[in-house]
Length: 269
Image 1 (cartoon, rainbow, N blue to C red):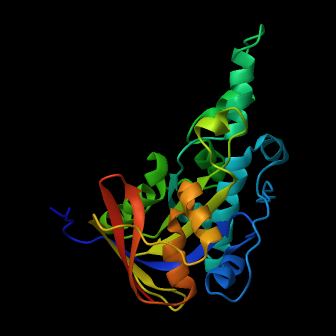
Image 2 (cartoon, one colour):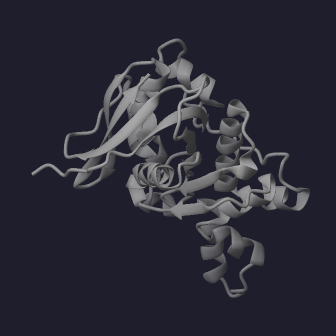
């Protein structure tokens, strides 16, 4: 029996931010997904944003740089004040390098963990840095659903929009782990996408999406290398939807979510 969802959650897409392997921003990714540019799987480049004070900029770990980078891309493209936006941060894990260094410390004779390492190890670290960088005081949710984290974040953002009637910024992101953690969690690189979603259409909207649960198989990408990227990083499960947006192709897109359910996204360009 197929799972069903009543009162289908929906929203308009105001803008997109994206950073990933060989992709510096959403326009570069859109050109690749639309077939207008070739993709080269170069390692993701992450920089701490100038919006952070110098001390926090030095302490920012990879997932923080990634989350802030995609979020600021989306809000800048929309011309919206990030301090006024509700946010949903969704990631399958924390910062792998930081986790590795904490494990090294705990395995050593000196088991005193650096306070900086500890505060960067919590799952809501990116949300905290976002507040520092933007001055945001609006509600913020932080989620983790393993490989279904993008889908969980999308559902949470749509639920908030349905309930509050206000825009919501979804930030879905994952970064790689060093060995030996990578052997158990083989995420090869960093990838993140931010969707600024609004309850109403405006002149800058780039489409509308509505989501239901389904047990249909997830869509794949025609390019084998890009489909490998989709499968290897949880946040990149968003790529079939992003491909439809890049091509301005209305229709139904099925995204990976949970073992027993996928997300059927009806996208209207």
